[in-house]
Image (tube, rainbow, N blue to C red; front, side):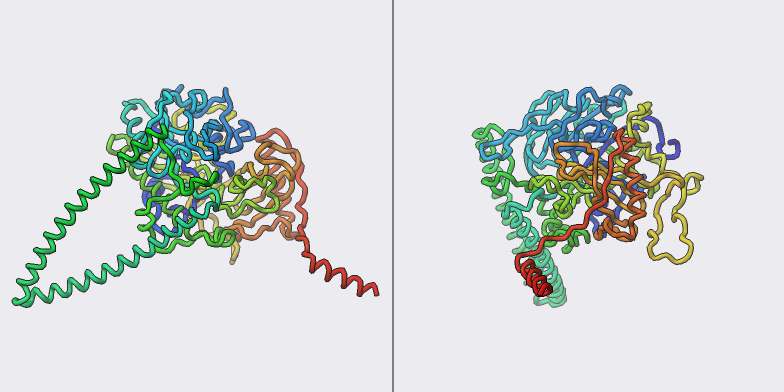
Length: 618
């Protein structure tokens, strides 16, 4: 990759966020200025416009990225999944190649580490054992589930000895501090750092009501703050005009100067009183925290409702929420399938902003230590989120309320941001090829100069970042359609590799067992009827689930799987999907057509039909 990477064996920072939708980022279509740091990184590096997550569940996606093997092979396909023993991981390959490795943040690949109280509330976690860390034998500052060990302000992680490290000054600040600790240890050796922050994480359930109420209060506070800022600006402008008038009047000038002196004295006194009050409050809070920790013996996670056994309340910093644009419209598909999302979406986008701020601070740390120019930064997400709007349909085979958030092939959850940038990246090029994030394992190993084993799936996607004038590239505008064509895709902003098959496989688990194929025109999915997607990873028989005409329906609103006009397209996609399944799972299942569903009539309609039938008989 001489035209893409400046030098061999660069440092590699692998940033793995959680439920980050691609359309939440400015460089992937978000109109508001939410991710300026990521946007800048993308403009200076390689941006993949059509990156697809290989699995709709974050735990399974993490397992794929660490091993280069699909969930159907590793068996890591549920939220309680664990990496299989004996499988060589990304960290082990790189350590063998002389890289220093470190892991900071959320691990989520060690099964159950939770300690619960009598109400079922998670109060603590145990450390991830060395054999469960996927080969990260060096620097380790992580928890299996940061949602159980921390909130936005305080919590704890574990180090490489399994010792608990507590923090009280903010989770993101703590994680950044740990990355700085690692960077201070690397010396002149190349390093591979996996940074897995917790943001963004939308709430997983709409209960409890108190959580939604708190989100509503935050949104109203934002509106009030905006109104107050407008009023203060108007008052300041009026005051300035009045003061200017006084300065031109000799009689009033002395009076104005006296008012300014008195105001300055009052402000100085007020600032002194506030400082004393803040110092007293800080001391009281410290005393209270110490007393609570002594009593409980652990750092306790803050929750909204202590009596509720199932609640996940992921709140963003209020200051960031208030700094966002006054109105942030949720994506079209989320508005259609999940009305009333606006308050939660505001909070979610604030978490995206928090994440971008964290990325900016990490980049500044690399620059301050003189490491940035020889570092490749890979930024991506495990998956997106449908905000619980896409995954509770008729084909949902697992009716567990806690699992309805997963198990979908829609763009909401499988289209992810993917940017490869940093000082060591020489090419600035958007790529319009469809790529799977399964390829990131092979790409990282190729960056490090490691001979990649044949059983590592995917491709080196940096090889797709051709320059515009290279013979391998087709672009930057793509092929021009012959004649008017209202259904043609918008002009490409990046390069497309001619002759390359544009497709990606998606595995689906938890609330259904399914498979899907994403192409440059369609998304087609199948599911295994009457199979528990949280207990079984493969099946011999599937049925049609959905078919979306993505180039004409980018929000995937209209399921065409029963439309006879699309039968030929469906059968062709089915054959392509079965070929992919056969290649990756070494079996070729059968697939049945979907059946039309007619909802049951209510009693009044049944009686009306019976009366009509009786009248016809007479």
